[in-house]
Amino acid sequence: MSIIEPLIQQVLIMFLLMGMGYALNRLGILSEQAAIEFGKLLINLVIPAIILKSFWIEYSFQRMYELGMTLMLSAAMLLLACVVARLLFRGRPIDIFAAAFSNAGFVGIPLVEAALGKDAVFFITCMIALLNAMQWTYGQYLLSGSKKCMSPKAILTSPMVMALLGGFLIFILRVPTVPLAQSVLSYISGLNTPLAMMTLGIYLAQSDLMALLRAKSLFAVSSVRLLVIPILSLLFLCLFPCDGSIKMALLIAAATPTGANVAIFAQQHNKDYRYACGTVCVTTLLSMFTMPAIVSLSQLVF
Image 1 (tube, helix red, strand yellow):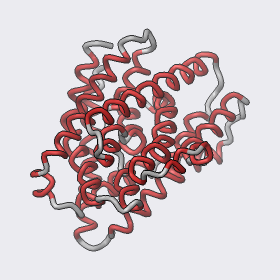
Image 2: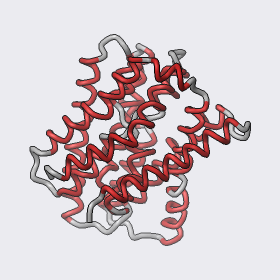
Image 3: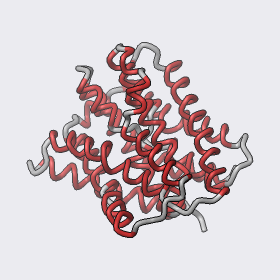
Image 4: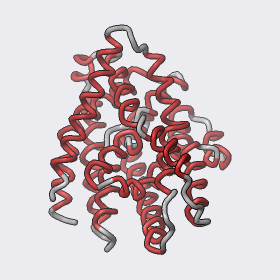
């Protein structure tokens, strides 16, 4: 069965949720501050819960192999994205951040789950953790210019990395599942898609759409984030003889639009917050068309 149909259906669901966030902000029900608080909740609780839940499964050598493979591939793909973004947008920190870092957690998880099933989320947990660790360190360094962000402490205290390490210990120690804990993690994980997409909807409502459409630099960033990096990632994944589901899950995560953290961090470091929001909004809107195209292309190769 083709994964394009469930992928498109999930993209449409996510855009409807984003539209709800847009409408609620316009109606004065959800403020811009709500988006910031939703972002904190997603980063510090929801995504870590998803990572822990995906690791709390029965141990097997096959799963251990998949974990090692996805860790290696994720690190290489993120490095590739950072290098490409740095070369193409030298001296433009927001553009580098926006092009390099995808929304693998907020957007990637529901898309991978819809296209490949809940078990496939395990394949992108390493990418999510590494991506967020790099955003909290290298990404903040880009926007602040301070090398303090690059410290080992900053990496190890990232919520995603802590969740990855905790999940890995649960996995290798073969901790038996606890139904109550699994239920709690499931409820928290279920918040990911609605909260993430309503957050993006609020960001969209705060933006001047006409001004965004006139900004040529946003389309340059979108082209790199949604086409150049995913296609290079696709070519890279073709070099490895691993399971097609692993490749597809990683590709979907790599092809997602710009993560909302660029707007959050830009605001914290007194950069052009509106422009950073624009990179999130424009790439998210355009991804409705680019992601099915990238996945269709991959099905000819994998």
